[in-house]
Amino acid sequence: MADPATPKLPLEIEDIKKILPHRHPFLLVDRVVELEPDKRIVGIKNVSANERYFIAGPGGVPVMPASILTEAMAQAGAVLILAKPENQSRLIYFMGIDKVRYRRPVTAGDQVFLEGTVLRLRKAMGSLRGVARVDGKVVCEGQMTFALGDLKPPE
Image 1 (cartoon, rainbow, N blue to C red):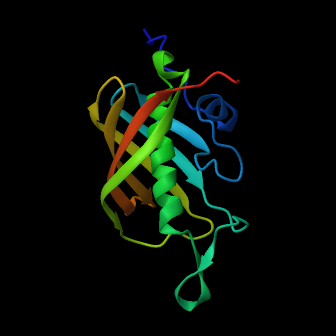
Image 2: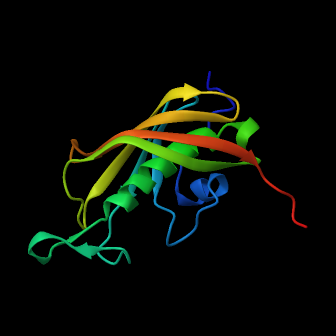
């Protein structure tokens, strides 16, 4: 029997927008295909040629900036944490990154699989290991620390 706290998969963009506060052009997770609460998530970022942030890499080939790729991994992890019913009224803050390595460039047409695995999880903070893959090959990996805060009511 399915856990009622686990969202029905796959999560499409409209489902993700109900979980994350990010919006276009800075919403970087297009779909979630795996989600194990408090453990692991796999999201997808479809990389399009008309993304505003592309920079010319070696030979003039546009590549996704490493900082944007890191943010995409962090957003997938944020979906994992914020999808829990008790966290739905909270915000998640990206507090730090460690041991991040960029292995290969990401270019237009790539489909990036964003995997987040919980390393440590407490009531108000935690850390995740993120791995981004294209065609099964690691393009980026690292550890991210986050903190949870309460939404402030409008004044």
